[in-house]
Length: 148
Ligand code: HEC
Image (tube, rainbow, N blue to C red):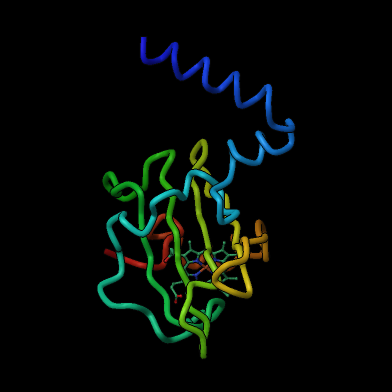
């Protein structure tokens, strides 16, 4: 019963809104991040204290925290795990960058998002091979530098 009501509601939304808006709504949060990062601030943090140093190897400056949606099983994170690093850039007081790793079919996908004020939406800053090539240095910990 409840499921049917939800379907009717969704159909209503589709009928009213432009299809582009619906697609954006389905895949991203209001802030412009992918929906699979929703609520990351409440996931277990895998760093003990906020990182304030850059590296080595250095890629992400600022004050950083790392959140993981799932726990490692043995030496690896399971498929579907999302790891978010929030970054408060030097001289600012809001999260201006969000670096994301998401494991799909045994491989990590990497995307980093940025915004230049706390009210604007995030846009993609960088992704893919650039990230992967440096994270290869953390291969022994399933490509994740931060250890719980
Ligand atoms: C030159 C090396 C380097 C590059 C390039 C790099 N990273 Fe990282 N990344 C690190 C290091 C080192 C850490 C550990 C935390 C820290 O020092 O900030 C880290 C941490 C992370 C974390 C938290 C999980 C972990 O591994 O500790 C995520 C998520 C992340 N990076 C995503 C990305 C994405 C997305 C990109 C590409 C846009 C990227 N990284 C590019 C070095 C790199």
